[in-house]
Image (cartoon, rainbow, N blue to C red; front, side, top):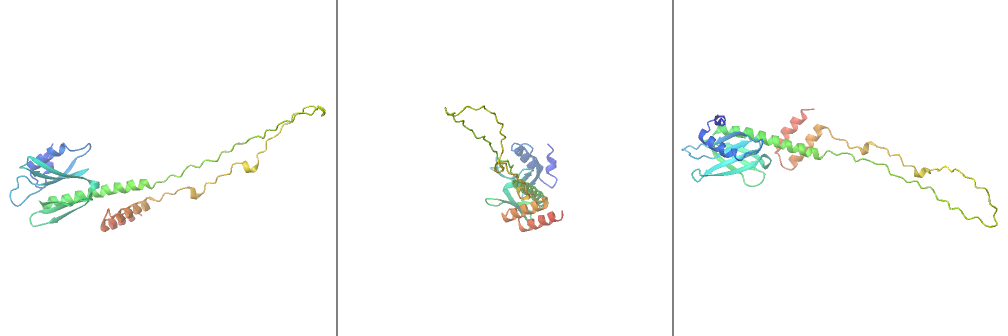
Amino acid sequence: MNFELFAIDGQDIKIVEKLVVKLQDMMTEGERIDYIAVQKKPAVTILPDSITISNKRIFMCEFTKLGLATDFEIFSWKDIKDIAFKEEIFGSKVTVIPSTGENLSIDYIPKVQARKLYQLIKGALETSKLKEIEQEREKFIVTAPKQTAPSFEIHQPIIEEEPASKNTPSLPIVEEVNETIVPETMIPPTIEVTAATIVEEDDEITLKLRKLKNLFDKQLITQAEYENKKNEILSQI
């Protein structure tokens, strides 16, 4: 692997190489490393902390015990609420805000790397939220139930013949062909399908706005994100 691809913004190539070797053993199928930010303190830092992002997760790494052990805090994108950073005199302090639990921060991240992290993480979070909106939209797709006509069974009355009396003269048997007349009340009613039986789906723009408002009500997105996304959707009209 070309480790120099992850050292284009001044990252220590030796630290990058050591990190990538460890991270490759934790990668899932289809996962790839997108960016690595490495801590750089004013004094010499032999084992700096780092933040690595992939297309699926974010890894916050801390070397411990003189590099013999490594502590990782790993979050999938759906578990991250937001990302923030603060530029200071020496580098920036990057803070990851999970959906639950305490915020995690790493300081002395070079400013160029901190800005790149912010850009990539914001983009990944937006993509993850759009997937959630699409999943919510699929839950609202309702299919109209099929209507079946009621079944009717027609029974012919059974006529029992009375035995002939001894005094009654025998008469020739005349076979009669009786036509079965079905009463009107037994005819299956005509089922009319009206517009009320058909569930009309909202247009795509309305669905997007509704899902976006639902996310804002659940406090999954900020007011600014809600307004920006709403204006973007409305511009498609």
